[in-house]
Length: 320
Ligand code: ADP
Image (cartoon, rainbow, N blue to C red; front, side, top):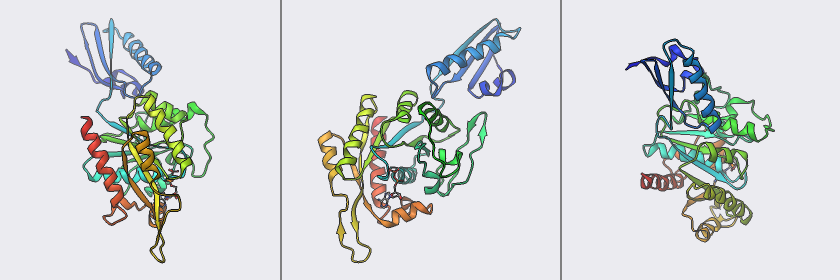
């Protein structure tokens, strides 16, 4: 059976999806990477390929084989019940810490309504290019490739998008040229809205990490976000407490502006693993604002991120 280069027979938008094409004795077989496609998109692409090849004189029958992921790439979602609890900060630092543990990490900033990863990674203003109708992630000094709505729209422009648009934006960010990335962290918008639903329907994550401050209200919302994953059969890797314990920069005295230990207690109550606690520290905010990630260092500030990443690493290892 002779192999044919799909690019010579199919338009680029279809060829990009076809990993193998053979034509023999009037029979064409196209192997299509259907990763991330919904039922309708799968049917559309199948029909488009059959129609195109069916017009050829040397083809009397076309078989389209839809395969799942071209490469097994695990998605790990990072969610929270409400905004401002440090979900983006945690995701970015976990990406760096997991990469240090040997994973090939990429980061999708799916917080389409308030994308902050371009600032955290210091690559704001850079525009991702498109190749074969898919986005190419933007590099960062940390070596982590990143894709964010913040790279696609002007900073500060409110994204008053309705559900389907937000969901499609997510698909574009995830279904991009991630090449050798094996672990894609997805920084979700807070809550349980359309982006979360799209994520669960089209790209089921391997697991989810939930972050909360210790306050009761943030915790109740985080538990609700957890329920959504649970119902969709996505295991919760564990809960993280952020902004726990504040060291006064003048006298060093520790205080707990948002309470202490609430997330760990909640994790026990919900029967979920507790992954760790990150202190409220001005240096974390300052680092995020100027594109310097604490986890890239090896001081005390980096430690909690590395400890949490080590637990996620162990969890991933236990799944295979
Ligand atoms: P979210 O993604 O939940 O909306 P962000 O990660 O954007 O939250 O964090 C909100 C703000 O709080 C940012 O300015 C960030 O730098 C700051 N921040 C997050 N975690 C900490 C922390 N542990 N200590 C100090 N500032 C923090």
